[in-house]
Length: 228
Image 1 (cartoon, rainbow, N blue to C red):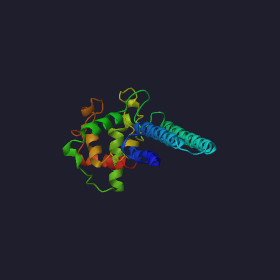
Image 2 (image 1 turned 90 degrees about the vertical axis):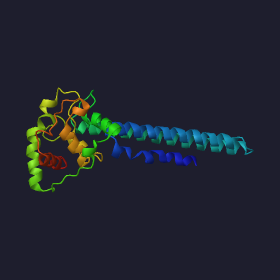
Image 3 (image 1 turned 135 degrees about the vertical axis):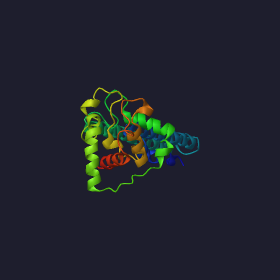
C-alpha cells in the first residue's frame, strides 16, 4: 500500500494546466519531495516491523542494505525531479526575456494578480458564459491585430510578451498575454472580461475598453491573441 504514495506526483500533474507556471513548478516539486519522504518513512517502518521477527541476522542485514538502497534511489529521484522542474521554470523565464509568464522580476505580475482574483471570486456572471461569436477567419484575425497594435502593444509588447515600452515602469507589470491567453482558464469570457474591465477590479493601471471598443472589436482582439 505504501507504494501508492508515489502516485502523489501524478495526481498533482493537473496543477500545470490550472495554475500559472510560477506556482505550479514549486507546488509540484513540493509534491515530489513530500511523496518521496513519506515513502521512505513508510518503508523504514515496514523494515523495523520485519526486524522484530525471528529472521536470521544475515537475512536482516541483507534486507536492511536493500532498504537503504531503495531509500537512496527514491530520495535521489525526487530531488532530481524537483531540480529538473525548477530548471524548466528557469529556462522558460529565460526564453521570455527574463520577465517570465507573469511579468517583470521582483514584482507580482498582472497575470498573477488576475489569476488570484479569478480563483477567489471567479468571472462576473455577465462575462462567465460568453463565447466569441465571430468566426476565426483571416479577416477577423487581421482586424484584431490592428486593434491590438493600436490599443494594447504599447504596454503588452508587439508579440504579447508584456515588454512594451509604456509598461516598463508599471507595477504590477503588464501580463505576458501570449502565454496566459493559451492557458485553460483563459476562456472567451475570461479574456473578454479582462479587456472590457481592464485593471479596475485589481486596482492596476490597465484601462477598461468596454466604453472605447465595440464588442466585435474586443472579440477580434481575442481571436488575434489566440494566434500569438
